[in-house]
Image (tube, rainbow, N blue to C red; front, side, top):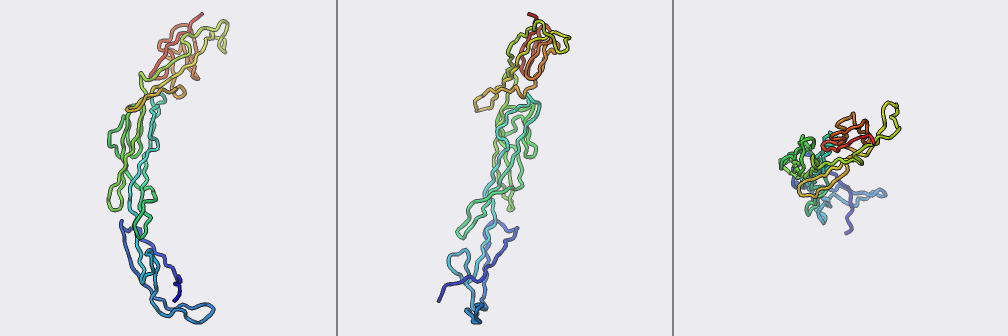
Length: 277
């Protein structure tokens, strides 16, 4: 009587189309002979082989258990979960892509499976609570000129091989700033003519300049509003370029007289009035 010795291992591959669940297959074997290299004696005569598998003790037959990868759940996510709509200032739409990760039961022993591992899988997207002024095309959510503040609840859905639908919610919050929520201010509302100074071509008198600032108050339901400086992305224009021009974030006086509406970033304005001292 002695210790058992591992003589040979065997590898098996589960079919890619294995259904979700457990599939068991038993197999046996016979030892024909076991001879040492240094001698011609057979240590083992013809006898049934013993097997070591996922069960605790040696068995008279081997058992292969296949645990097909089953879907434990699906995780949905958005590349941008909080969108601050800057379309009123830049004229450019913004988008967020919805993606998913599928969690599979793939690590198993004789006592059962643990949930581990994840991967990508084909999925589709749909809106459950209505789009807040944006649009959903495929799995891309876009906000633009018609966007209003609020939360859009999208769903991603995945159908596994057994036809079971897994789904997960993906909330996307949209912040918006419009009309009265936008304030345009200037450092000085009066741009004086600089005595004795001429423009670079010496064709017209030179006036003072003043900085222009655009602030937007962003809101969304259920959250506290906040104000942010959007001067760097706002499009600044003048209502009367014969009196005032705007460039580089500053208003430049051109000629004597008021400029109604002055320099502003849509949809806000600020009055400016170049004058002769």
